[in-house]
Amino acid sequence: MFRFIGAAVWTVIFLILSIPFILVFFLLRFICPKFVANASQTIVCGAFRMVYFISGVKLTVLGKENLSKDTPVLLVPNHRSIFDIIVTYPECIMQTGYVAKKETSKIPVFSLWMRLMNCQFLDRKNLRKGLKVINKSAELIKSGKSMCIFPEGTRNKGTEPLLPFHDGSLKIAEKAECPVVPVAINNTEEIFEAHFPKIKKTHVIIEFCKPIETKGLSRAEIREVSVKAQEALKDAYLRNQKLI
Image (cartoon, rainbow, N blue to C red; front, side, top):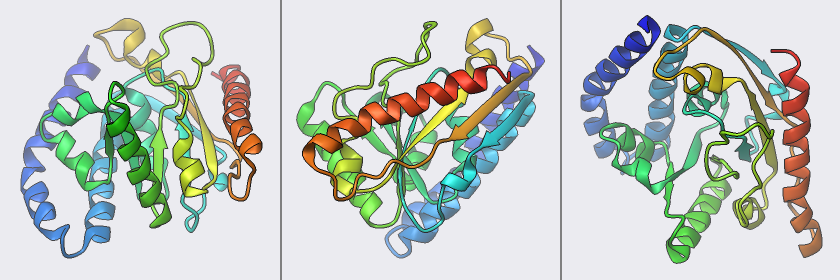
């Protein structure tokens, strides 16, 4: 319970103390948007590192060589915990925006940081707005930024390694013609969700799988990208589960 209190207190303190930075960054983003996005990500990732340090997370990261500092990608992780973003975001080596459900846009203060970091808010019930988010995310990738989307669409609370990918979840990569990098995350649910409201010391493994190219593919080959991503993600998850 002490870890939960510590993480909660740190989060509240960070959000309050970060408000002046947000105000300055929202003014600067019209002048130097790249600097603002990178600086915002550095600050938020530092806060995330403190959260998982307080929570007692031991983190093992595999396959980071599959990320490039020069090539933006679409990251597609599995999703089991609210800690998935907290532990993976600090490992991103490029400026990276997340595609999050629209409800996230209502979180006080933190949603402002998300906007500064080029995160996009997806309304899963509105196809027209959803298409705008896909197009905007593809534009961001073309401009040199990576994006991340949870293709399962929601947290997996079952025993199966993966939930089915939502139709069109990899459409961003198709439009941007960028590589898809599956990201296998193991054991984050054991930090918090498995024994709510306690936070427990946990070993988490993240693996960045080999990129799957989308550029120059035929329509039939594009449809296979989702299958390949799911297979790579499932294989890595099952393999790393044995190391926990």
